[in-house]
Structure formats: structure tokens, C-alpha cells
Amino acid sequence: MHPLVKLAKDTIEQYIRNRNIIGPPDAPVPEMNAKAGVFVSIKKKGGLRGCIGTFQSTTENVAAEIIQNAISAATEDPRFPPVSKSELGALEYSVDVLTAPEKVKSKNDLDPKKYGVIVKSGERKGLLLPDLEGVDSVDEQISIASMKAGIYLGEDIELYRFEVKRYK
Image (cartoon, rainbow, N blue to C red; front, side, top):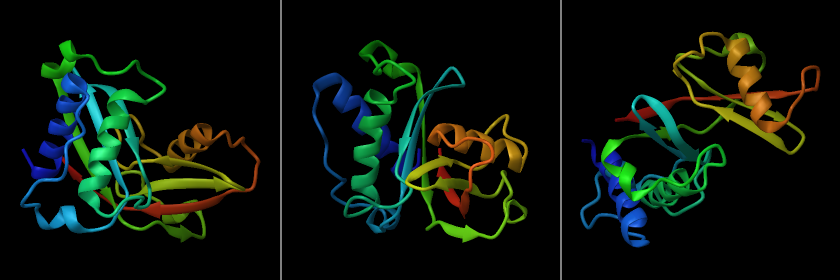
């Protein structure tokens, strides 16, 4: 298990079992010291069980970002009830570290397998990670990200793309 994923797993297990928020490892791997947006995804029996993240860094480094987002993914994803102690043994984790978003001129600059997308209209923003099962076209990707932000078809939008390094 990659150290970033182990940190997410250990964070969630400690928090769910003891309500204890762990700190970063004493000897962090280099990736933990960078500043970047991070998504923590939890799956159970192949299905999504929680996913929360930040598209830009909100803490001092990736390690702190993982700890914050892992707890949120396990307890605050509005689509799911909080993770219970009895589920912990059945969970799988992944961590996506995002590159800085870059504005694109059109949807022709997107590729749902390679790039995640941020759709923005005014203050509303919706994000969708790349290479998600069942999302095979740019239009699907934009539609899902728009829906997450409450952006309706026909509204003026700005598009941004980013890449991720996915750790499992």
C-alpha cells in the first residue's frame, strides 16, 4: 500500500474507532510535503462509499490535506451515512493528488480519461475527477460536474482541466 493511501486508511480507522485525529507520519515521503489539492475516495465492494476533496491546497501540505479530506470522506459526504466501525475491514481507499487547474478554451481541450474537469459559472464550481468508470465522453463529464454545482444547460460556463496522480 502506498504511503499516501496508508495515511488515508490510518486516519479514517483512528477517527472512526477513537475519534482521534492523527498527525502526519514522522518520516513523510516526498509527495506528502508538496502543496496540492487532494481527493480521498472510499469504496466498499467496488461501489463508492465516500469521496471528498479539495481542488487546490487548503492546508500546509499534502499529508495534512489527506488527513482532513479522509475524515470528511468518511463522515461528511452528503451522499452517504458516516462510515461505521463494522465497515472498516471492507473498505478500500484511493488518493488523488491534483495538478493546478488550467483554463481551457473549449471542451475540445478535454479528455475524460486523462483530465479531470472543473465547470464554473459565477461562484458555482463543480469538479469531476478523470478516468471514472462509466464516464466515457467529455459531454458526460461536463454534465456531471455541472449538475454537482447546480449549473444548468445553457448557462455560460468556464472550463478548467487538471491531471491527477492516483494512488491505490
